[in-house]
Amino acid sequence: MRKEKIDQRKSSRVFFTLEEGIAATISSLQDITQSIPVTILSISTGGLSLMVNRYKLPKVNDGDRLALTSIGTPPPMGPIDRVETMVKYVLDFKHCVRLALGCEFIQPPEFLVKKLEDYVQSRLKEAEFNR
Image 1 (cartoon, helix red, strand yellow):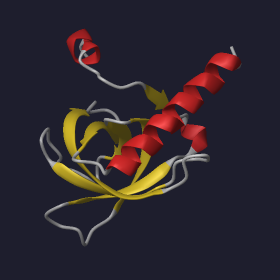
Image 2 (cartoon, one colour):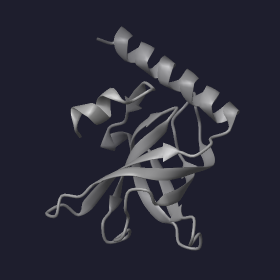
Image 3 (tube, one colour):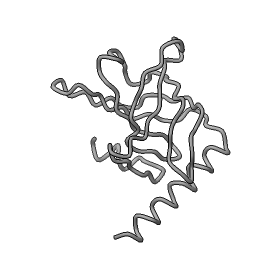
């Protein structure tokens, strides 16, 4: 990601390892009948990044709107039922079977923003303590 994009970030984020297996499902807002499993890589009050099998989501572009459901964030946050997002970037390395997407939350409810803010701060504080 370009440095200019990183400098534009407004919120702190936390990252998950693949071993943590933070999963969710996504669907297009136009076709909510098909749910696709994804792995969450990071989360903040502004959005999240995820990995998805390129063959399950072959056509995704910046600006596409996706619904994320059944987001299995760990305690103390707990699961998130549903949130709408907009794709901000797609990392597509042709030799990889997975795509990485960066998504911005679209008008998340205030309670979710507060819940995310508290979770991110507690996880960052925990990481700092364990250094």
